[in-house]
Image 1 (cartoon, rainbow, N blue to C red):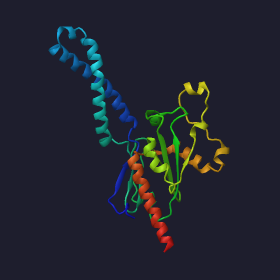
Image 2 (cartoon, helix red, strand yellow; image 1 turned 180 degrees about the horizontal axis):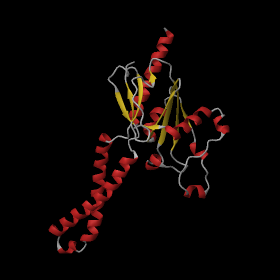
Image 3 (cartoon, rainbow, N blue to C red; image 1 turned 180 degrees about the vertical axis):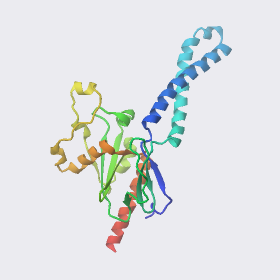
Image 4 (cartoon, helix red, strand yellow; image 1 turned 30 degrees about the vertical axis):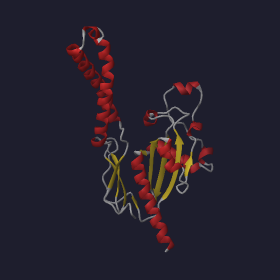
Length: 257
């Protein structure tokens, strides 16, 4: 396999974890105060008397872009060095799941969770991020975005992975008929009453008639995503898909020989 012949690749999952979001939230206030003080000092030192009369207003306004620049740069840095503790390692043997999070730490295994040389079952689907009360990471991206997801299974091992991205980026997957990304209208599961809309977002129950329908396996996979799905960046999602596709193509080649 071309992808699996490379050095091990590490995909860091759930990059916008709760610790990072808390740090960014605190940095927003610190950055704003720093911007307020900086603008106030500059106005006091260099502003004309006419402008100095508005120093308080200008300092309040000037602190906003200062804070935004601070958190933009800080977020870029933190995402590179402060990971959630959950990651996937891909090497020439297979796929490893590494979970070092405090609440679910597992011992590292020398054996892959899935091996490329054995058969992999995979289903792919996508959904729109609108028409229902969103929570968590889904709420922090534009409603026009799409979620693309895949579930890979080998024997008793199952991996459920997804990524959120703009429609034009998602089209690489949704319009690729070979990959068979199936559309799920998740909005139909949610209560559309006003009471439900003003309440805190929560996942609904997927009725048995959906789980037993023609699309049942996709709805079951979507429920798995809610329970333990791993979020990757769009680029890392593409990397994982490439490894899985290469493994499946290698298996097909061997079967035909």
